[in-house]
Amino acid sequence: MTMKRRTVLAGLAGTTAAAALGVPTFAGKDKVKAGFIYVGPVGDGGWSFQHDQGRKAVEAAYGDKVETSYVESVPEGADAERVMTQMALSGHDIIFATSFGYMDAVQNVAKKFPKVKFEHATGYKRAPNVATYSSRFYEGRAVIGTIAGMVTRTNKVGYIASYPIPEVIRGINSAFIHARKKNPNVEFKIVWVFTWFDPSKEADAAKALIEQGCDVIMQHTDSTAPMAIAEKAGITAFGQASDMSAFGPHAQATAIIDNWAPYYVDRVGKVLDGTWKSEDTWGGIASGMVAFAPFNENLPAEVKAAAQKMIDDIKSGAYHPFTGPLNKQDGTPWLKPGEVADDGTLAGMNFYVEGITDTIPS
Image (cartoon, rainbow, N blue to C red; front, side):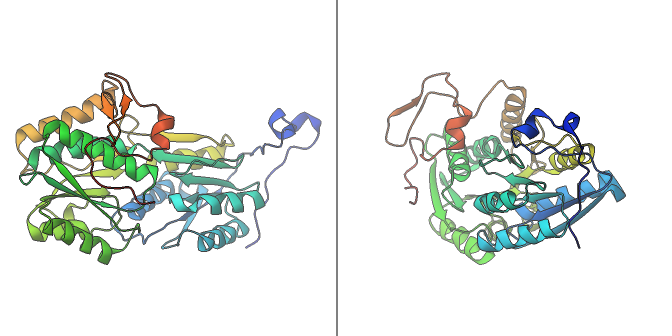
């Protein structure tokens, strides 16, 4: 297909100040072609599956005004740049790149196609035609940390971590802080698998953690393998990105659900009406971007109540998961009593909080 052309206002009267500064302006469209690029398969049951639910929501919302496409299991790096380039060449008006490691590829392709709009999930590099968006996953981790601290009997919680990026480190810290608030004796055992999606590696990590005495498993990876292992072992686990209860009906206490659909519907709508602009979005429980699967009916009432109170307090703004007093791992003060971490520090978090014995891989 040839690249779609946009309507451009001719003449000086149509030139905006933004255009004069080299910032592209985007006219509304009768129909939008939106592309999605996924790091895992849409059937992963987690991260990519949930993004694809958002894509389907776009189709449901706009009908024949939108055409969507996706490419799954695209490695971060040169392959991502190739796929996005092909999307741009084939007439896509907006491209959603849904993994942190696509960041530089997005920037490279966006420079070559200034009239195509790009959206990068969990990244921080923007451009006139590149927006960024992410979810405050750490708010969900505060909730599951609360549950973990209350249900563990061995006082050992296992955490399957993907890559040592701020998003993952924030989640570990938040879960640990809130597990410790409920149970000062909790220890976290962390296994780094250096992949987003590899069921075999994730399953092996879950088994290793169980062998170390962990009776609760958390994950920041994308497959349902750890949930299936937890179900077989008769321990507690939490769904990641999506409701994984089908793979662990007894194991899953709840799941942090990444609800991307409202964001995708809104952003494609802005392309349709010509109001899209480059900006950064960081949504959480209050905005509905972070949601939860129903609590397992076997959870004790007091555990459900504590978890629900955490959800309600974060949603209302009465509580922030990173509220002092908190120290860094080496014991140096970080946040004073009542002090709340700023978004800049959270966005670049590269340290553990006090009490975690793991070493962040370099």
